[in-house]
Amino acid sequence: VSVRPSNERQTDGPCSVVEIFGAPLAKCICVLQLIVDDLLLFRESLPHTQLLVPADLAPFLSRPLEDAASTAMGSSGAAFVRTGHQWMLLRLEGGARERIAGASAAHELVELAVAARDAQASSSSNSS
Image (cartoon, rainbow, N blue to C red; front, side, top):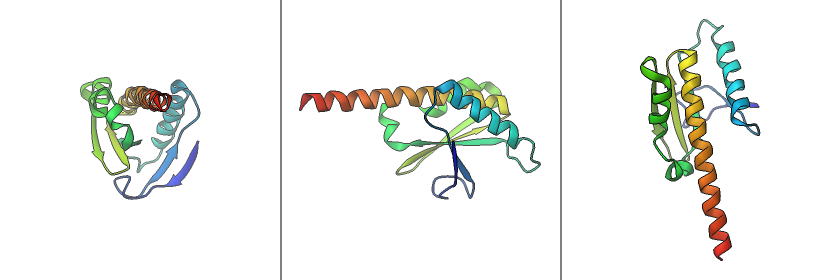
């Protein structure tokens, strides 16, 4: 896990980016749950979570991120995507449980997209 200041073009205003990498999905979601729970202790915490996803994965997603997240969140939450040149920003709004459910669904979709991208790259290099 690492923390860095965000590039304001990546997010909606100034904030910090927490990068969670090198762990299975269940561990990544557990870390996200801990972060969200800790942030809830602050009076100024906002009822949303923003996830950055590399834009080059978009062609490999089996369905839109916001659809997967919204379905997982149910009627108590909402999900929106803003697409930029290098990043897709998935904004999850709602209670902590809804945001974690949306993040889990989005993460699963992203993992499948990475696998599809890597398989395509591998088959392309094997064809050469």
